[in-house]
Every structure is written in C-alpha cells, then in structure tokens.
Length: 196
Image (cartoon, rainbow, N blue to C red; front, side, top):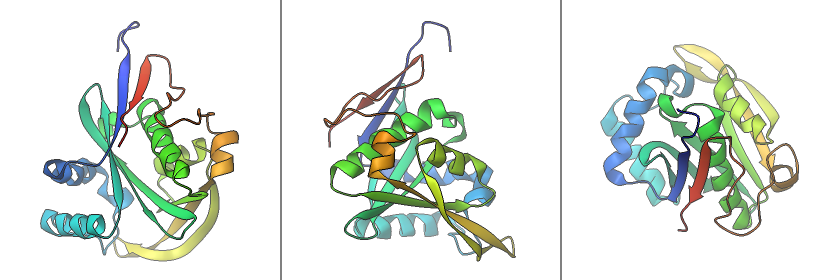
C-alpha cells in the first residue's frame, strides 16, 4: 500500500450463498488450526452444515476490503444475554488492520441488540485467533483440556469471552453509540458499515 492510499474495510450483514464455497477454500491452507477430526471432510458436507446453521438462526456478516470479499463473521445466541462468534478471513486479509475493525463493527451490532457477552473458542495453539479476541478486550474464561481430537490426538480448546462493558470501555477502542458509527481504524484504513 502506498503512503497516501486509503483501504476501505466494509462490513455487510449477510453472506452471499454463491460465495460460501470460498470460505472452504480460504481455510484449506490453515485447516489444521480450525478443524478437528469431526469437521466436514468435503465441500458438500461443509455446504450442508452451513445451510443448517443459517436455517437455525445463525447470523452472518461479509467483510470486504476495497470491494474484495475476504471474510465472514458469524454469530448465534447461546442464551438471552450471550452470543457466540466465529470468523474466517482469507490469509491475505489477516492482520489487525482489517480483522480488528471488522470485528469491532460486528461486535457493536451484536451488543446493540441487547447481548451482554460474546464468547468464542479456538484451539490453544491458534495464537492468531486468540490474539485478535484479546486485542478486542477478550479474556480467557476457560481452557478445556483434551476437549476434541485433531489429527488423532486430544487437543485443548480455549474459551475467550468479551463482555459489553469490557468491549465499550476496556482495552477495545471506544465506539460511538449510534449504529453504523465509524470505528477508529489504523492509518491508511477506513471502515464503512452498511445498515442491515
């Protein structure tokens, strides 16, 4: 990126069905960091699981940078006050300059609907996911030892939680309260959030 060039990060509610196979493709190079031995083994299984989750109430957001689709953020209620959140970014979108403002926009929307806490899980060795969540204000709530099997071996899963109060006033950047507010972004980037 040149010195004067501004990158636009856009978050849109919904994820286009024609692009769902891209999510599978994005994860192929790092599948061992996010899939266990019980995950979908084929794109057909993945598409079926996606459709079932969407029909079951999961909400998705598309993440675009300079008009290019490169990420998906998903959430579903766990209880009346807690929602889970998961996300996938293609490798060229990795880095806090794109992922953090996109996550901040989605978290602001989730909290604006009345949720008080968001949780996410990652394998203990997935430093990128854990680091992003902690950079947003998350904290390790639990380590579930030997929680699943990956590559034939038991692996630990870390549960990261982020309360609305920590998000709004803690380590995460302060967001304006109105919907669609511009989020503080790194130099050379601008976030645009489309209303749903």
